Image (cartoon, rainbow, N blue to C red; front, side):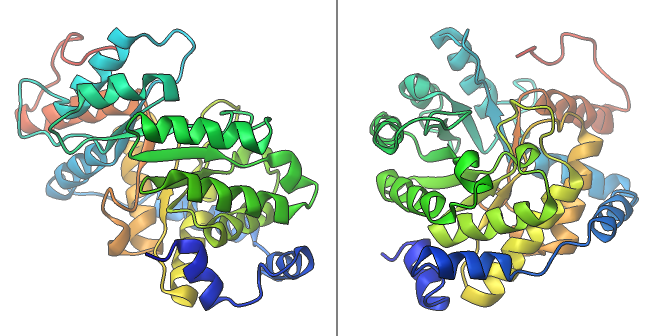
Amino acid sequence: MPTNASAAAHALPDVTASDSTLRRFLHGLPGVDAVGLEARAASLGTRSIKTTAKAYAIDLAISMVDLTTLEGADTPGKVRALGAKAVHPDPTDRTTPATAAVCVYPDMVATAKEAVAGSTVKVASVATAFPAGRAPLGVKLADVREAVAAGADEIDMVIDRGAFLAGNYMKVYDEIVAVKEACGAARLKVIFETGELSTYDNIRRASWLGMLGGADFIKTSTGKVAVNATPANTLLMLEAVRDFRTQTGIQVGVKPAGGIRTSKDAIKFLVLVNETAGEDWLDNHWFRFGASSLLNDLLMQRQKLATGRYSGPDYVTVD
């Protein structure tokens, strides 16, 4: 089966033939109107959502969560508890949808896989020397292969931001292609760390570079820096996947991660998806939230809509 990279190469011939052609293409993308981008993101964030639509949006958002633990203190017990929560976010209400995935370090993949066995929940693993990405390519590929061998359904890689910011686009492209190959059947999410890319123009270029390299998803951030997902940078990436599909016929997902903590925030992002990329992306196969605390607020708001009141502090588990 052809990869996204090979399909993109067919649709956009010669773009990745050399460093100079790749640079010419990326720097030929339209410049980003920062004021206009931020104004549109802010405007879409003011849309009023009625009760019935809000209930639907909350369930949709729950189904899009990559429930995440990426701490040095992670234990098998914590990962098993996270997996159980992903499968049944609210044990008192089995109508609550499962989350899309649990996301863990590679050494916890086998534990997570066992915890979600028999469910629809995927196991995602960060790799490629997450979060800094400062390692030789061979080490990064070994990281990916070990995670896949342990059962990871999805791999979240980080790009070499130093190479990107130095203008060494071909190195970044080649690494994405190599990681995609190492993923085998696992889907690949390419993390840009948008807070370190400095400009919206760089985020647009990184988005196209990731998609040309074969990304199944493009992802804002690791959640490990000061600036993570924002409505504006996510809007820009949604525009990129929309335009990429128009040019190549290839659909790529988007994953904002870090800093999305409330139901109100999540619904604003869903409005961005609907109004920018369209309904085709309103599905957890194409849109995810990288989050840990978001799920708790979604569950609290879901319960409030159902009963008219909030439960006590023990209603949701503290991750």
